[in-house]
Image 1: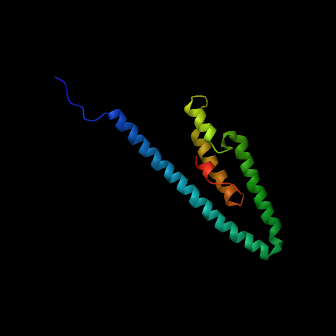
Image 2: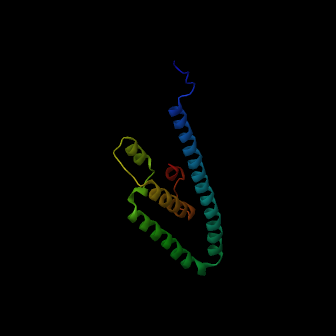
Image 3: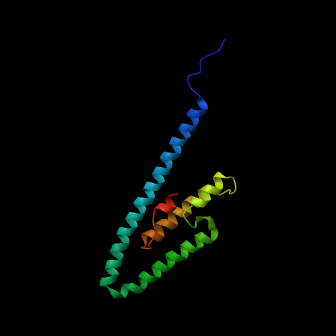
Length: 129
């Protein structure tokens, strides 16, 4: 006797995984945006302070150079963090690329917050991909 199968559990599993991925990505991107806004607020105060106290301009420049050095080291260690990530996603979907997503995620997150948060003219959309 045939049983009536109301649900295709494989499709439900795909939907559940999609929901889980969506929630996790939403949390990561929200943390990214909040981190950037926080750093921009701090840097705005630092720039205003340095503008009113010129003796602090040199330490500010040194601090920004240190941030650039940290980002350069992260790019050296994981070259795949450069760029928007769209090509990387396409390459993975086509089976051409195999990337270490966790290594890329945290470096892209930290590098994006440091670079955008320190005042570089970059969009937050690219690293969110």
